[in-house]
Length: 355
Image (tube, rainbow, N blue to C red; front, side, top):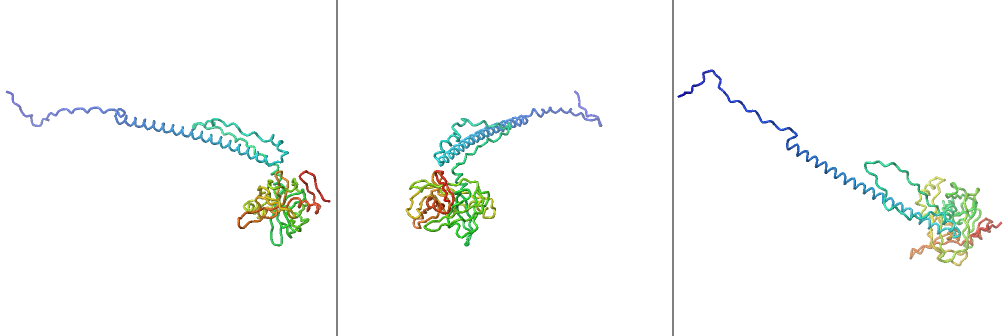
């Protein structure tokens, strides 16, 4: 029978050998790595998809803007064509056939699709803006504008403003009440090259007349207006001049009053019809073209651009607030010019002069 004996004193006790730890997996083999990788891929795919949607939206936006530009250009051309035809209707009927050949054809075709929008990745080459040809101004309207002048008369009671018009390159006709007792008279428009001094030659304030003849030292480069017979009821007429109701808001007019003597205010046009020609001495044309203070002395012309009257005053019905514009007939003005020995022309281009 065996017997266990204790180890000798001082001898070390025997311990079991330690076991080795299990090896750890590589970092790229962990589930967390692959989960993060998948999440990043999903976020990248979502960002790419959103970018593609934004890109398509931008392309559609550019295409819509291109379509809008095409439509706006088409509308501009149509409006331009309409203005040209309206201006032609105001021309001398004898010139209509000749002017028709000068008008550009109306735009009829529009691109079915707008030009393709440029890709955001590509930078389009700059293109020159298309040349725009302005619509030709009405010859008749330009002639009336060039022949109508603003008159400034330094009367004893202050500065008087009115309108007038050239009856020859060296003579202007206006109302006598615009000139009054003024010795210093000046006139200006876009063709006079700044303010010009004028000399009153003759005034008529008798027998219902209200005329003043002015003379310039140097002829102006303008085409004088011609006179026509007295108009008939319902005939279309237009008034040209410098009404204070409009000129007061004209920056060019304010600049002129501030001392800029080369600044010519805008000539104002209004149209209407002859309501009645009053059979008095002289005969008075009552018309519906809008005039106000400042129009006095300006021309009232017919559809052919010939002077049929001289705008002289207005009347206001206080009960109905209806305004009547009154002009003295051109025949009375021609009689005055004959008495003054001033040259003038009539509608048939035959010069009339009382020598």
